[in-house]
Image (cartoon, rainbow, N blue to C red; front, side):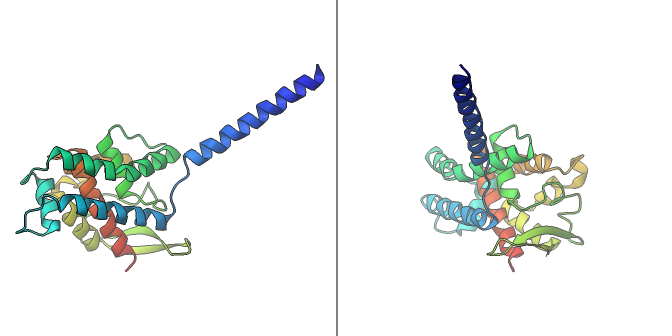
Length: 222
């Protein structure tokens, strides 16, 4: 009887250990370098998809802006392709939100959260009421190829330029601090997604936030 009890206890403990390992694996997050590679690869896929319908008389960046602003529509087939290409970002966002207990109540906010926050970012302080004002500085974390962290200062003009490139001029007003009581990561994701999803829903958010994330990554590494 004692022997049977010991066997059952051992099996139970082993099962708990495996479940713990599986849970840890399920929320494992990307490295900073892998995150930026992911954004780059997603953007490349976006470009290939959008080039299928881009008018010849405008650039790809102009085309993205006109899609986000609603000046040009995008076929449903291409919207589906964009969302499918966004899956790695959605998966990353879900894991980051789970680790940090961040509430994200819709797909657009989830996509925005993933593109706005890199793995090494401080979710509590990356953005605030001064982040998009040209006379202030934005602190972010830069990770080197060896993954060692060091605090970098990015000029707020660069942040503003990235936001304008991704969303358009109205971002200056739409992301004004007076519109939001708290600049938490959840609130920032909601604010960004609300602007970007006006005409294309989650697809517009995906195009905008990947553009913004790559721009910020470029500026942080310069």
